[in-house]
Image 1 (cartoon, rainbow, N blue to C red):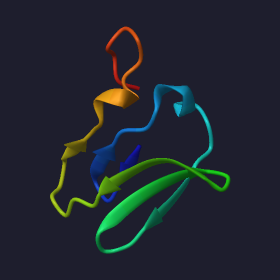
Image 2: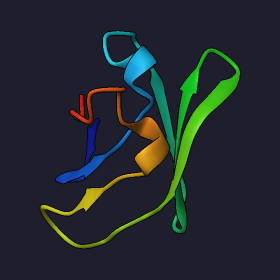
Image 3: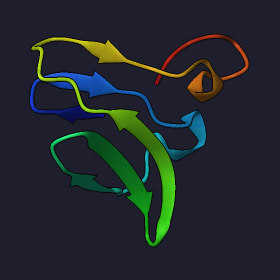
Length: 63
């Protein structure tokens, strides 16, 4: 998902869901309801791709 011109990975099982993003100066958290489905250190770069290998689908493609 994209926030502040950076792409943050989410689990492939949540690729088509409506999610909530909570951000502070250090962290980007992506929630499905009350459940945190991803958390990343916030990047202040532009065009960065922040991803976790566990968020890749079985075929290796990123959603």
